[in-house]
Length: 441
Image (cartoon, rainbow, N blue to C red; front, side, top):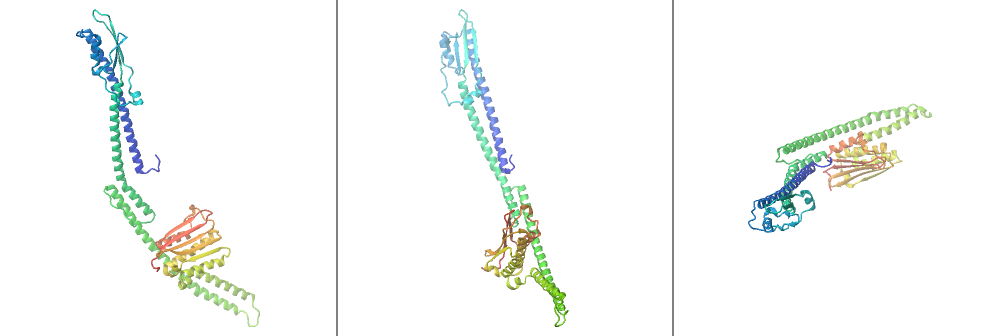
């Protein structure tokens, strides 16, 4: 049996096979019974007729009738209507008078199945004062076979009607009994998709009702755990951002001031009018380089443009930084007008996801072109799309990188949807939908 068949299909198939087996057994029984009946009827008719003839001739009970008249009367009996009687080997008996009208035609297969072997009886009778008489009685089973076919057909039709009724009843009963299973399977599919708020109804069957309550409890527990994990993720991300702010401030205050002091001290190494000392020149160049590194670090740790100018300006600045540092790669950025209104923590989370996505494009995708788009899918959904024409990767590498896992956690903490479409050699496309109710249309 195919493993792809559902439980309902398997039960229906098994019930159908059981009904078919019952029909086959009933058919074989009916044919066997009909064959025995035809055989017994033919044999009984032959022997009864032979007994009547022997009694009449031996007991001199013809009562003045000729042999032809007596046998004509004998032919009118029920038992002799299926016989062919020959007297003396040459003189056939009269055609029996009581023959049933021909009914429906008997199928050839039934005739072959129930037709008995030829039943023939011959007797030589000695009559006092008369010459011996030879009587040959042969059975003709056509009428018996027709009667047997009529009875068998009625039995088979009744058996088929009963089997069909039983199958229909069991089919409906099984269907009603398994309907809760289909509802519960759909409920489990919703749980698999992360839809934990739907609840299954109660069922009349105690076992099904217990399963329904168990699935509802599972959905409630998973939903609660998901909400707790989202809250913990948001709290963890908030702590992380706070640490980044503190680190950026520390770098700005301490590292920046120290570099400024070093640069000033290097300027004092030479006296007025003296040529610049090579060491002092190198120290000044190193300080300028470190100033640039510090500024880049501070941008990554704390995007000041995000707080001052908003999400759209921060993303434009981020894309421009990648264009400057990787001129061999073409970056394109699109942003809807309403997106510029987004502020606060959600704007920071979207910026971090875009930052991680662009980093993956440059470091891992080996792409020539990259696209970043931030739009409104509708009045209450933010749509973030990142796409590249790089090398992509297969399903065996999904979820192995910490960057994608971190993005999934951020999306999950915001109650959004995360979808990644990629294949080896076909680039990658990341599609994120985030609900946001504070955007004015």
